Amino acid sequence: MKTGIVFEGGAFRTIFSCGVMDAFLEKDIMPDYMIGVSAGAAYGVSYASKQQGRNLKLILDYCNDKRYMGVNNLLNPKNRCFYGLKFAYETIPNELLPFDKDTFDSYEGEFYAVVTNVETGKPEYMRYTTDEVPSKILQATCALPMLFPYIYIDGTPYLDGGLSDSIPFEKAFADGCDRVVVVLTREAGYRKKTTASTKLVARAYLKYPELAKDLVKRAGRYNRCLKKLEKLEKEGKVIVIRPENTKGFSRMERNKEKILNLYDDGYSKGIAIAQKVKDFYGMN
Image: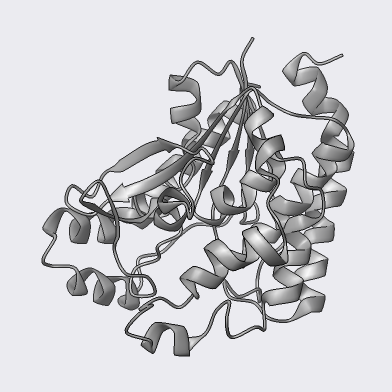
């Protein structure tokens, strides 16, 4: 049996998933396959490296640090990103809050990140390894439109994986997983809407018509994905873990009390469901 886990993105809403990850580390739950989107991948690597608490410390320590994120980074012609790329992808993991590459490398499973090919508008699934520093794959999966430059990998421009495949559970099954746990960052009943700002962003990418079309279609695709997931959940083929409520929690949330509350929600839900997940995965 091949076990898998899927981490949805959602910028700082992914702190919920980090709580689940820490609970699973505490309960010694480590699946054979991991796939993450955007922040789900960027924070998911700390789960594979077994660094309990690292993601929470990262967000609490740097959510208000202008070197980590802020408009000045976006206006800097050498950066052109809301996040400080060098600070976030080099200084933090290499110096300030070291990423345990050795433990990650000892993970016997597979870790994938979803990226969106700007030219085709379609998702691509790239296996993350520690060979490339800084990782273009982790940058690309997090590259939100308008807030990031294109991230080029082998000459091809990429943006955030959530634009094309926000919840890649179908990829997990296609890659041979028999049992899949899906960690979402939105509460039950949430449905995505196509807003005026989404249409505006799509117009900004008319140079790449396939991407522009996909941006407008994203909400419908996301909602259909949720329906499929709900069906699989009822059939007992997946376990879905969702936050209680994310209303009032910003993608770029800086309120540490809110951050801690959402993390605690994920941690408590992870602890509560741990035995069910172990049984589902066939773990002793």
